[in-house]
Length: 189
Image (cartoon, rainbow, N blue to C red):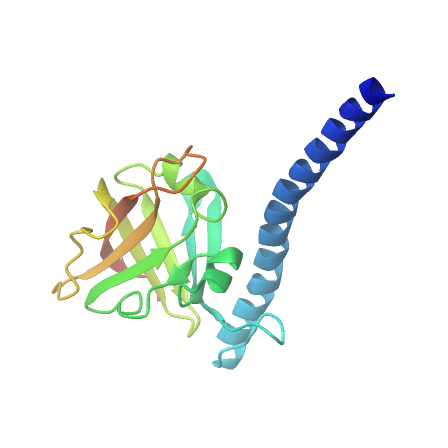
């Protein structure tokens, strides 16, 4: 009897662990669908639209890297709840297209997984929820400690930084962050 129970217990534990991992990715996918709808309504109405009634955040931008087919809706703020559903706009930074550095952060294993495929010179399109469009060019990347980003909040140009944990294939979090820097090329208006 014990020989039969232990394989069943191991199979059940494996199934639970697989289900937990699949749940995270399914939640991220569904959230992006709801966020796309809320973002489109925000652009159409000019007002912040929450993706679901209990959300503590709302869409502020859409980022796209067309060369690799990547797109994500950016949320206001970087609380743990917001980052569970998409990239977040760090409060203390400017909006995309404004003078200074707009910083968007996300998890490396969901919404910013595509950063590993972005190369220097790639075009990054940002559409804000007010409908204004901006085009950036990725000009450098770096791996830095979380507390030593080197981002200059007083930058005189319009810049964009996309950041996530490093290394991309790590199983646990660590002190390093990947930073992709881009400079404004122009508007898409």
